[in-house]
Amino acid sequence: MPSERQTTRRPSRSARGRRKRSSRGAYTSDRSLHVSGWEVGGSAGGGRRRKGYCSGLKRHRGVRMAAFSMDRRGPEEPLARKGGGGAACQQLIASSGGEAADSPSVFRLCISRRDRWGLILTAACTRRRDIKLLLLGTGESGKSTILKQMRLHHVGGYTDEERDGYREIVYANLIQSMQVVIEALHDLNMPLPPSLRDKAAYIMSVRISAHDPCPPMLDPMVTKALVALWADPTTKACVSKSREFQLNDSASYYFDAAERIGAPNYVPTDQDILRSRVKTTGLTEERFQVGQLNYVVFDVGGQRSERKKWIHCFENVNVLIFLVAISEYDQTLYEDSDINRMNEAAGLFESISNSRWFAQSSVILFLNKTDLFKAKLITSPIYEYYSDYVGPSDYPTGCAYMESKFRPLYRNEAARPLIVHFTCATDTEQLKVVFAAVEESILKAAMEDLGIL
Picture 1 (spheres, rainbow, N blue to C red):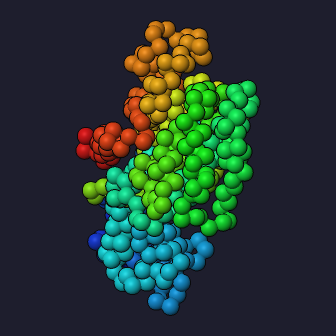
Picture 2 (cartoon, helix red, strand yellow):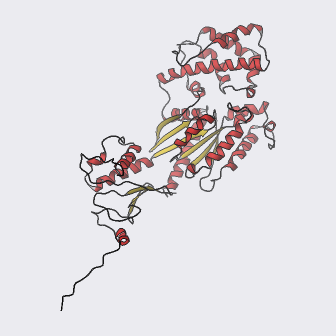
């Protein structure tokens, strides 16, 4: 009788994929490790992997899985070949503040699987400490001023060289603002006294070019003309009607300081820098550290022509701060004199805050320029521009009305409650309190994401 042969059934492919490996083997799909809100586990399909492979890395909340697989190669072999995982891992490390993606791969030095896992986990934890904060809003809503305040608060201000660079910007803001007022005097049929007409003509002849070196001080003739023009009641009356033309919000501030700005050895103060105005084009990035968190703040141009560039900043944003200049309820756009600025801001806020890009982001609304808003209410009542406004034209009622115009536009309140702050971007002391509240809400959201709260 032939001997009975013991037979074993080979497990199916799916069963083999589910089978756990020893500590020396590769991780499979049913084994994972959670680190700082990241899940590191096997590939989506399971299956057999050779010893020495890394598995995958994926973030919670439904973000698609990005697999990082590395072959066993010699030190002389490139890891970044097409279809391999070397380039992906290099990019992960580079994005977390490690080696640049085009540098010799740090993974070539890894002999054991433990070393490779250690590098990936370190990169994941580092990346979780980065807070990506995006400043959005229409043109002249105060985004760049908020970014300057963040720098003053977290980085420690400006160097002497940087202040010297702002000197030319302050000169340009001062002179160009007076030129706008002189043109408006003509358009509004508000003639200057004969004694000031020569001074007005002299100011109109001044040209400041970015290609010319900045003078160490303003021409004394320019300073005298500016001081004389601003002392005239007709000029002040014209500025009070600035809603009828496009004038820099800081014009009156600079006119009041014309003599100081025109003095020899002038150095811009923090307030001079905060109030300086340069149209933001493209992208401005600022980095600073708060405790254990690294903040990466992006400021983008708010004009219509600049908005198409925003899309590159939208991915993986932790916090969106949207700014609205509530003082602009009686003004129109630079680009279109038929469109009210507040209506433009409301439409943009609705589309941005409810975008799929920010479904997992904390949204904070800064109703900005409260100082200008409060001053305007006396001479320009809100009910003249909004028929649904009910109540006295005072500051508390006006603020409540402005919040009521924006809060209902946000439709993700249940998942991510909208946080609203009334701000004056040039008020450093007030912004310190606001920043502290913002940082607290950011930390709270981060702890909720990690399941701590």
